[in-house]
Length: 297
Image (cartoon, rainbow, N blue to C red; front, side, top):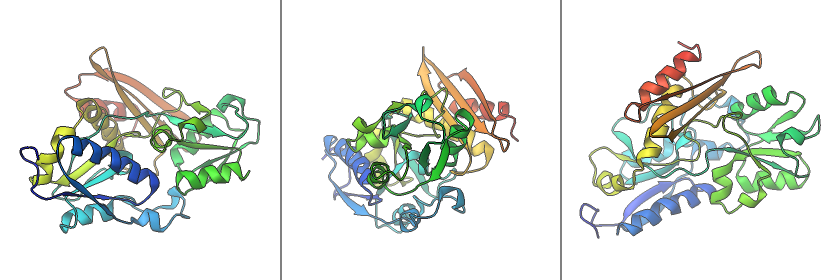
């Protein structure tokens, strides 16, 4: 076992969905490569227990993370694996994201029954989505399409598509890729045109500050992912809302500089956007500038 790793297996908390387990396997494989033994603790979140509630009607934050954070706080788990986009803007006291893993595909994916891309879908086609952001951006780009609220795991949604309940789905490309379902993607949407959710495609590993687990997990941190997520989540934090806000924020490194595009849908259906660049060393400052330019307090 490597220096600084715990003497016993590191207990990793995760949700029980197929995607959550696949993402946890990515994290635990990296830990095993660093000679850290792990065991997995499945924790059921509030969001998992209420699969029929549309995201737009969820109250508060932490629907998919609070129970995992509680497992860290009460000592049942040493670390927790999250989809970074599910994290609330403020973490529970005493906890921190110790590592952001290398990012998967940040883009949104369109999956259709007839193979048509976003511009090729027939007028009146139905599109299943659980995201207020995706619904708002879809409405702005194709107001003639019909968004249908749809939650459930990836296989459940693909099954509803195949059964003809909807004509298309909007999902995260990274999730489909990690489940080995990337071949179902009809179109990976242009992130400048259909701006991804803040931190989409990033796996986050959270632990107690100052714990042995922190020292074991810290070497997994990817500096580029961390800078991008910090910029994107700062936009979200400045706007003061969670997953119900129709906001996209996507950062990447180009020519040694951090470039951030952010977009926000207004109540009238219009979408305002901004693209700015700054130093990698100040991602939160870049996020703050983007939020200000979007015209928010």
